[in-house]
Image 1 (cartoon, helix red, strand yellow):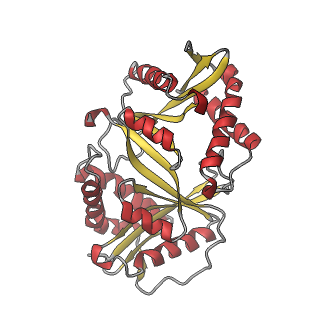
Image 2: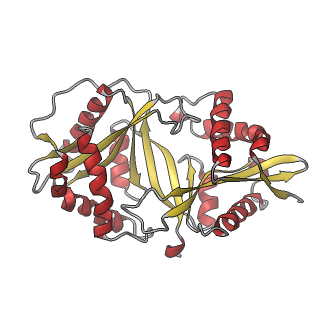
Image 3: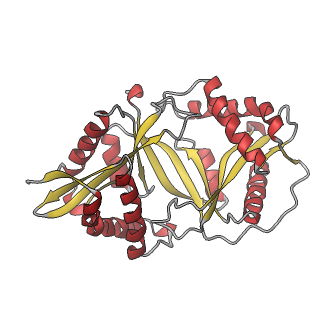
Length: 334
């Protein structure tokens, strides 16, 4: 079958509308449990603005055209790698917010050519490492990326549309951590960093303990300044740690789900192995949700390294749903 891969400019972005509406329709069909979704027209309005911003910056978009019809597209922008506390990849990576081929046109080479064209374009300016995002139910996308060397790396779980948590008095064992005491949490964080490596032998490469703590010390300090950092037990040897933050005015996922303008994110929950199953993690999650609700952040999200099945199952049990899977291809790991 004859087809062409073409690059588009900002003034041509509307050629993507039919393709994006089909993509959204398919996502709604395969992911009904994540409803409600934004309506198709609202999705396109928001996605169009995102794509225009991408093309107005460092992004590029390629389309696959067959018989004068757009049957697939890939889009990428260059971002700072978001897992500096975890993965030792290049500082700048290519993020593909769009990699889609119409169902009837799959397994005909369109997707491979779109991905390869984007890889060459980014590689020409020194960007080698890539990340692609999918809904967890988009099995065809997962399989396609796996064939091209991508690995499931990170799962984002969401709790959108829930009633605000009832204000609660912190449990007597929960203590807020001040920014000047954050240094005491180094060993707790590194325990989790090592756990990630143990449960994810096929991922990596991993940053050193020193570099990992350098990143997370700043995250913990920001959470403490916002009043969203707690421990359970002794600060010299805590039983559990929870760090969170509020994201105000974010457009994250707004082209897919009708989330509110402010989101609450649990950056990390650490529970010592001997205290798991005691309810301490769930109580800290409730405390974080109630505190962020008072700050106007009712819709919530939390992330987990993809192979950490136990953590993911815990979040699902307390009302979160798998919403976004990021698959990575780090050249240092190949």
